[in-house]
View (cartoon, rainbow, N blue to C red):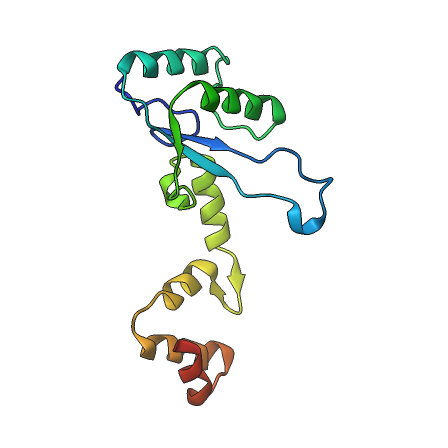
Length: 152
């Protein structure tokens, strides 16, 4: 396998890292964001060593888990080998995992005010103000004047 192609968490060369237990912190300091780190090593031998380390975790080593034991192993991997923070990690579409895809389908299929979230996402991402205003007017009973302020 070439460097960057092992999977510790459902992307080609990215490791998912969750925060430790932050429940004892005040609400504003509790963390729920997951970070992603991409392989940055340059030596094939180092990559193969990292891959062997991951394989030593067992049969489901590359199946993501959020439990503290698994996350501890991920942190060990990150401390031993060359990974960097991936600032694009938050893009859910970069995660190639059937459970994430199922979750996205479930979320996009939820109906809110007569339209699915997927439909709302398409409407809100439209570059055409006329289409957004039509939907706001029809679904939300927003007048043209109010719709103009919303789309600006």
